[in-house]
Image 1: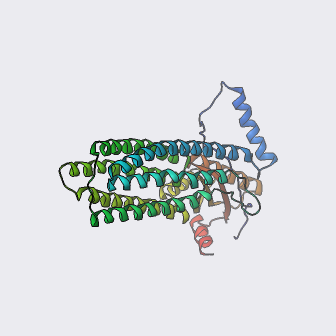
Image 2 (image 1 turned 90 degrees about the vertical axis):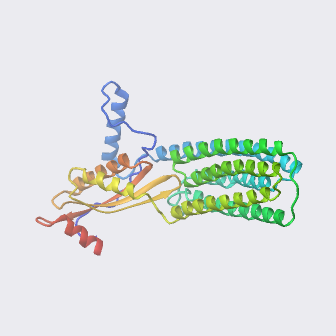
Image 3 (image 1 turned 60 degrees about the horizontal axis):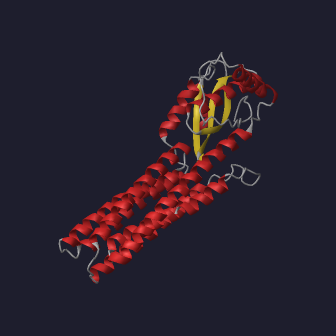
Length: 358
């Protein structure tokens, strides 16, 4: 890039646990912490305490693991209850629901592995760490959903071709309610935790469980139809459950695809640009890029500053811009800010246009 500029900044503060923007005159320990933080910039302006990021990543991974194992226990119990009723009643609709619940429970395995791998520290080969393991887990989840839909669909079609009476309808109805309750609890827990820690794979898994809950209720319709003497009701409901699974597959695949393609919410870019423009001394904002690494965001941004600033002043401005980004954008743990300059009388927008064209 042309012109005087500071080297890229890679300050990786982790503010995901929350930060108070107000003044705290009553707590000398916090005042000392702020003073120590400022001194750290003067002594080592390009190096911040990486342990903060590691500790936060460990905490979110532990929270994710706890969610997964609780979900596995609840869905495992639900699957056992439903499987026993399938063997007793011969309901293919309940069989499809049971298959899906079992698959949903097993998705805890790749996610659990991803969370464990994601705790590993970055090294010279994997310089951004191992957070992308969650994206690989998302692929495994999508494949699991696809396999469960194929198996459930096959069972329903086979039952339509070879009809069989469903027995113990009261047990089928109870199993359907159990399936709904278990899946809805797991769905809410996974989605809430996934959004809090920024895990797209966990959110996708939660959406999967939510649809499982509604498909469990659909089993009640099959049982009701069978009670009225409609033999085709059970396999038809099985096919509807397969269709519902395919809808979940579409949503989960889209979520995982976007993460693999480094997609972020455009509102986050707007928030970042607005935060940079509000920093005193920033004359213009160039390209802003973000990407997810595991359940943390990283950003790169270009800003235009006055050409008459010294290197130290430009560096301080870049640090201020970095802090503004981290405070404004949720889940952002590190930002690289590049400074370019504008000559006297030069429009900063022209500098940005030239910079982007180059």
